[in-house]
Length: 374
Image (cartoon, rainbow, N blue to C red; front, side, top):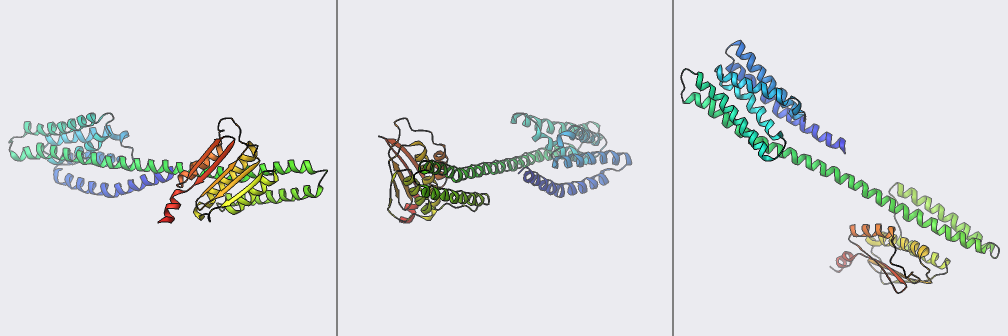
């Protein structure tokens, strides 16, 4: 992302260089030719032009502060020289670099306003020195050395404030995009971690239950032990495949398989299971509802002393109720909390209730119901 932001600034710099430097250079050279009637006047005006172009080039590169003071001092001196030496266009450099400097003044807006007024006052004062040395002071002299330079510097300063605001907005936009990209990465990592927890955490707990069951049946029912071991082998193989699919963003959870898997797990743990289907589940809600069922199944097997579980499926919702819930306050269920956020991000709602020894986990997507109704 930093590379993208840097690329944007580089493109803006190239645009500014192409749109500003050539016109400024051409106009500056013409003014030197017109006003530099002697070689020493031409040299002084050329120095002011070079300082102006250097300052503008550094400004487009975002490095203007390093050369700001010397370049500004040179152009200010050239304007004072021009006023004394009868070079009316010598204000060119100060009216370009001065307005560029004012928006960079740090502090409150009042300080920048004061800097702008100070700049205009200097341009007017330097131009007014011509009125002291000119042999004849007429309207033309006042217009050339006082009115025009002062008006130009005020107008250009106002334009530079607007230009600086545009740059600030672009910078804020780039920062906002960078923050959004970073947030998207964090969300994707959380989603990946949640899916990985769903796949591997669930499988490991099931394997633990099957190992415990196999230990109990080791002497009395070897054939059942063999069956449990085969199921564990198959389950681990499926988990490896699902993990690989998750790594390549191909994993999709199947709700029907999760219902069957939950039923088998509960029955293997000696828990009575009842599954009610009130309607065909909407495919848009199927995956997240399956994740809720998987996480809830793991929680029941780990935290509850359940003897019965009821799973109710509707078009856009699922409810899992079990008995055997402890009388202690509602425990902190990290997996369900993460799922609740994911459901909310997709327009769903997660409900977790514990009352009178029963625990209810329900997830629903109201917008799918309303959407189908319309």
